[in-house]
Length: 367
Image (cartoon, rainbow, N blue to C red; front, side, top):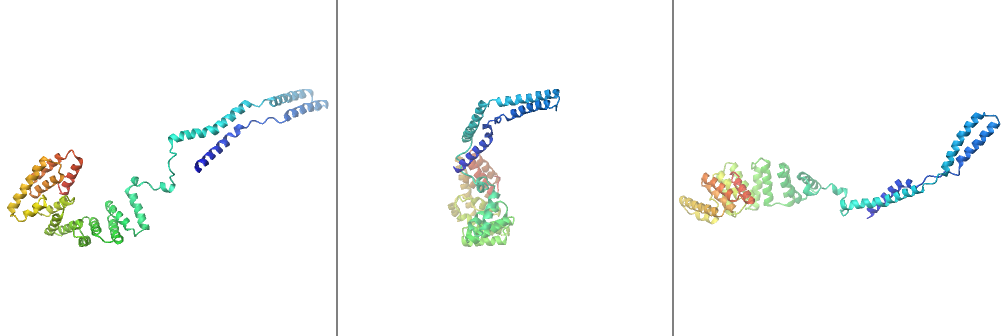
């Protein structure tokens, strides 16, 4: 309210400064002094003629000029004050003084935002998060951590973002600080190991492997650490050890585990021959069968699954299991046919189609 009052006062002062001269009339000629001077000059001309100081023709010319000036002065003295013009000027001043603010307010209220709260300059530099770039947000977090280096939560937030931005060495440092200030846990050790692998171009280094082993020691079911330990074995040429690690993961995993396709694809990559992930009970029953009977049982289950999916094609996980089974069985033609049938079945559902394509990509197939 005080700000509005100050603005109104300044506006009034500015209008008064401009219009005040218009409200003042011209000064009348003061007491006819100019006409008296000209009359004295006529008398002086007569005296000069009598004294012989000027000749008659010059005196006559002087009288004519002085008389002309005397008449002009008399006319000015008799001119009335333009009272009507004065009234118009004063009326214009009043209209400007009162009308302009009213017009300005009338225009501002429908077009402006009188109800908007104040927006201090310090806050204007802080752009809303939704409109800031990721780099700006990261810079703000980094500035905060520079002033508060023991903020473990800040390091845990910053670390994965740095990894996604490709700043891998900085991500490794952030994960280390997260462990230092948040405490040790299996997932934090696994995250640090993954960052070390990314910084090494996908190679599970000795340092990264040590982190994964620490994670598994803290939690034997830590999925990320177990997967990368299998990857380390694969990279070292120990394919059977890698397959053993990944089989153990699949044996304990729920059927809908999101990482299951990735591990199964890795197992196929190292030459493993897992059951086609139909059901845990079926896999357990097949352990006591001969190789021929086990193969026949698996083919029978695969055919049942294919038949069920032809009747109800909305089961994305079922399609992925069917394709995976054909891949494991070495039947590439049926695997391709199943991919085609699956896409056709979920073509009208964008979300299911996306899930299907992602699952196929995780298996190393054309997504």
